[in-house]
Length: 149
Image 1 (cartoon, rainbow, N blue to C red):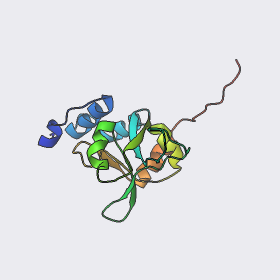
Image 2 (cartoon, rainbow, N blue to C red):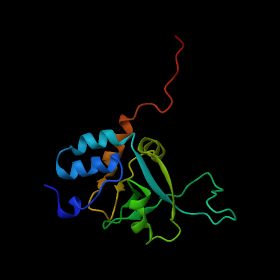
Image 3 (cartoon, helix red, strand yellow):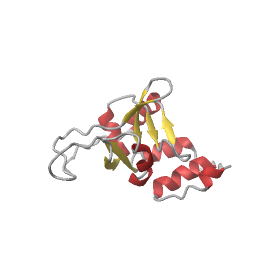
């Protein structure tokens, strides 16, 4: 059964449609997590102050990491840039971001970092460090070896 807030959540993309299905009980969280690897997410990153608007000088983007109630550091991602706006208003300097596949992000994490998808929204999901580790272990090779016929 969907919560009233989840019923008012209008999906903007396929990922959000899947999130709504998880919250409605018509898609299992396990299947959702397995399919999430190839979905595109928005990761807020700290803006650099540069003379050229929108130009990033460094090659290392600093993602938005917050502390949960237990003091654990959690990486924050969103199903679209629009979903990030209300949350990042509380974090000056994080008005920029990267749209990327979840698999790309998982490969660069290198291990069990908890992730919160759509914090502040009723339609979202939290992944603990163990679940992230399992998702990373299930990823296919990033650059499969090419074999000659």
